[in-house]
Image 1: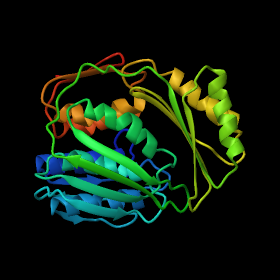
Image 2: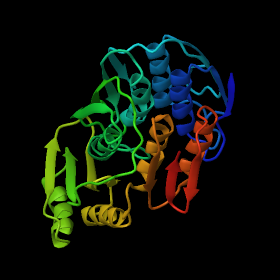
Image 3: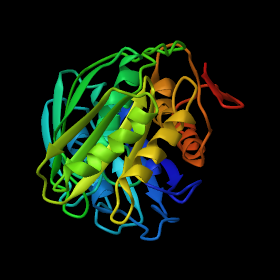
Image 4: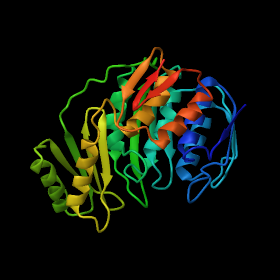
Length: 320
């Protein structure tokens, strides 16, 4: 059994997600203690609880401590079983963070899988479902896997009720050193239950910066919301609109974030790709704008399961 300190590094939910995924794939039991010890509300929240229970279902394993607020988990994985799965977080907890936990596991199943996750698709401190589809999935598909996803409907804080659907086939992951992509900047602006004028003002900022490929998508959701994704290849910038925050500020913030990302993959994607690079057949390398504390925490957890040489040379990551 591998012992994992959930308060290590940045001490958030990434420790749980990575540990549960790698435990399932390597068939190694784990105990995670001090779960989310550095967060304002430590212990398991609904999105983490949904993720760990989903892993137990997919792996037919045994799980102890899977309760709201729990600070310790013990997991004994079983056999990974692909198929059709439906999960409902019940809050605006992030659907993409649940999906991040499940996808690498299901790549090692013996048959195709389809998963539906209901919750928050566009919430803080997690990639939006649009980023997931437009930036993250193309990147891991670049490593030989076969995954598709779609946002059935958006879901915002506090009620959520958005839906992400993911379809994937068992795939062998291959290392990647080439990250060629389209340099065209694209923008998706989502509006729910708020005036279209907000989206038009956001679009104007991009047009003024010679970015013409901007789409405004209006929909009805349980809660009002405004979410913006600007992306260029494997670099993305996701910003949520907020009450009292001017539309122009939202758009400019996304533009500034995207302009700061000039390398193979953005700093958030670098963290998300590390697990796949560690599981891949062959070497992987990429350069990013910043090695975050989130990345370093993920690296520490991965190193407990997978014995690969992982080097950091400035902001260049190499997995041998």
